[in-house]
Image 1 (cartoon, rainbow, N blue to C red):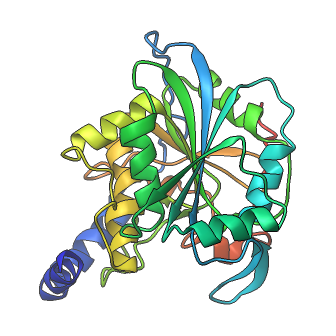
Image 2 (cartoon, rainbow, N blue to C red; image 1 turned 180 degrees about the vertical axis):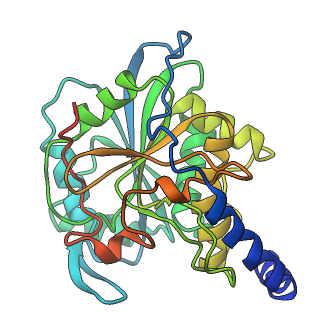
Length: 304
């Protein structure tokens, strides 16, 4: 209901909203510094890494994913577990697997197909909110805001390629003390909207990295709920989950960044009323997966 009400409001005020966004795009500054990170002296040492994989209990362990005109690619739980099994870095990793539409039969299917879960805490969650039901459980029940934990929030649509990335991604949070949310893909638009010229860069939620205290702050600001956890409609989950999470963390004063296929780190602009970052944007516009030769892949970092 909330999503459709918002769409009706957009439709009713369409001329004004469209012109307002066009004006914002036109007047945004062309000389804004791309890097926004500042040193926060109160950041605590990183204690451990928490890695969540969320899965729907009816997916096969290996599957093909198709996104619009993009050639399908292989992904699945098998590859997510495999890449963690191959990790031999320096960090202590606590592994969690949340499953919506959980069943004992599905766990048996996983184990019968060679996926070992002895190192994982397996948690059944409801399917409302899809991935965000798992993200919500981890944030509300597991992570500790008194510790500087680095938290990976992922689902099984991550492309199958396996590379070393965990330690380098953690080091980014040590290097950029104000970094609050990191992703491997983005979109600059809200597809679930009539206002198609609205510039709204946000990180896509199939693979995110954050800090425990940042996620806790975001939930507190959002009336104690993880964005998207109560939504049932897919479009609503994207708009009130994926997009809202990026906006909340940015409004809290933290920086958002994306790892590009080149391995470079690109910081998303701050969204201010008359300076939304439109004229300083250097990457492709729209859904990055549509202009990426290897969508949903985890990229190694060249900027170290």
